[in-house]
Image 1: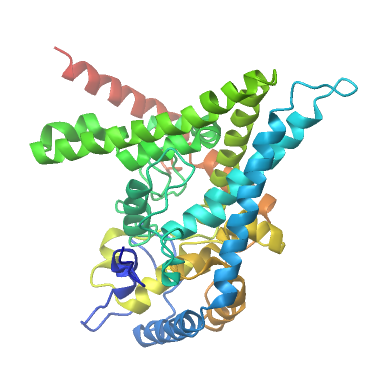
Image 2 (image 1 turned 120 degrees about the vertical axis):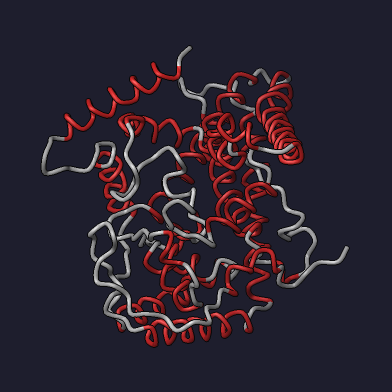
Amino acid sequence: MTLATEPTTLNSRISVDGTSERPQRPAYKSSGRANPAAHLTPAQIEEIGVELDRVRREVMDSRGARDAAYIRRVIAVQRWLEIGGRVTLLGSGVKVKGIRPAFWLGTAALSLAKILENMEIGHNVLHGQWDWMRDPKIHSTTWEWDFVSPAAQWKYKHNVLHHTYTNVLGRDDDLGYGILRVDPDQKWTPFYLAQPLIHWVNAAFFEYGIAAYDLGISDITQRWPGMNEGERAEWRRNASAVLAKIRRQVGKDYIAWPLVGLLTGAAPWVVLGDFIANSTRNVWANTVIVCGHFPAGVETFETDSIEGETRGEWYLRQMLGSANISGSRLLHTMTGNLSHQIEHHLYPDMPSNRYIEVAPRIRALMERYGLHYVTGSLPRQFASVYGRILTYALPNPQPDRSRWQTIRASIRERRGAAFTRSP
């Protein structure tokens, strides 16, 4: 098997390059909001790009045994946690002073294993961060993660689309995942009134939400009539792949291991332990992701603002469109180092263990050029995100009418449109 050292499919977003002379950025966006990079000249933006290229080159040229040992160690720990957790759960039928210690210990170990596999291993392996090792067992083209979304579909939606069009309105579907309004420049509809509850449902079943999102199931009924037969066939293949992956995941967690649990009288507890572990992983992954993308201070961008985008401008958008989470090394590992979301968006194929090394340099660079480096503790960032979810569930304030009047008018319009369409 031939493995590419640096897969161009994953890194094509790094090669953005504008050739025309760029104008000075306007002080305000078309929505009236201030442009945080308006003070930078086009030359300064390209200087930022040159410096960020230099940082990337230094790190990528220094990858070696230390980095390879790190990811192999994390994988070994994850596998021991998973095996230990599952075996311990098989003893859940035994009570000690009214409690089931094996159940709680096994569930905790399995939850940690699933978080590590999803965040620090799966997400980062699928980004191609470890492809340089040329190890077929730890490679973006061969890895299949413990998630119901097939790796191939996730890689396209996330690696190619999201990391190319980070926070560009109308181009980056990850901006709220089509179910959350997290920015005032997103168009409001009555659907968003339910988003404070929708967020929690999505968090609990996040892996299924991501699978549906990667498949584009939310608007398939609208797109289907305009799709040609080849596109419809491809969608059916992708849908079949999702269903097959769900069957494998459900079969492993809720059928195979519980059947083993029948031998020890722990089958119901094995099912419950797996459900709690999956839910814990889902809520944790969702929390880390929203805290890296949607807290206050993170910018969104208009579609026409990226026309002819240069390398420096692409870098600038990544810095302004992401946020970090401060904390310990253990927190960074458990987040898959996505607590360094700014650094990850700048260098998505850089080994995750290196983000903590480059973060001070990125922060100093941004401060030198007058750019806000958004960071904060996990509770602070999540409070900011959920505050935005509550705020933008409602329409933007308008000078001539209240939010409630806007809501009622929108509902009446939609009812009228539905009545007009009915036979």
